[in-house]
Length: 353
Image (tube, rainbow, N blue to C red):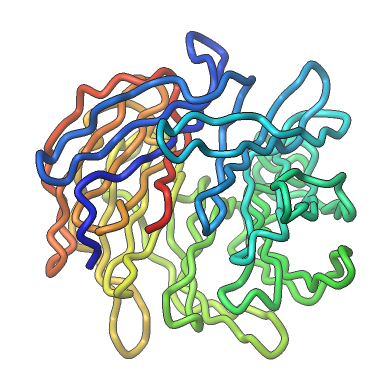
């Protein structure tokens, strides 16, 4: 367990109302409060963030007029301020997700509106993003006419062994695996999940053999087995994220696994809760434990802090961050603070420890 007393976090936002861009904050683990909320960088719709493993650079999705892409920033170690290095833009809507490889040489983005996955090389000397060297266009539709009228790539990241790239597409109910060679993405395998479920994100178990897919449209978590030989996935289990008697609109958002592999957390927008599950040691399947209110509206994301003694959730529509303490033995959350104001918060990330 890490002994740091303070951790710096960053929040990506929508800038449709009063937000100006990316905000930073400090989690004081001794006092158990979030403090020092301030604007770290001004830009349009930086809704998702990724931080290099050495904490030198931060990458954000960005919108600029009729273009969208990825922006790179250097991180000021003392102040936490972000200084923009460059941005690489493509025609059309901005991406909704960005991720970076462990060696921070490779960046992926997923574009919900265009149904594409983009690959960018990073200049490791200065952290700048090079132009996209590979763009993959997904094809198809799903049974939900309103939400699945075309592909909607919602996530693109690397498998734990970094042998493959994984893309999750809400519009076509597919999880697609790609190889990456000489800067080019090539399809390796695909998993078709339950029609109309609308898969959104995937989180890997620390053992590297299991993963959990959250579905936005059917409010479920799918436990899958990962095959590192060919990059394929196999379904093991479906569990609901909401009570059986909840009939109002709910759209799942983020999913994260504790580093000990014992617990999975999932966010419900609508039900406005974080759902907690225990992981079966032998099978990796999930058992529901409890729901915890997010003390606000539309929890777009959440994150475990580096010590994993705390969890921070972001409510987009009520403009607040919420801090919980986390019991490591039971996984359960206890509310500490819900009045941290940040406009239109979407993505929350901590610096690496």
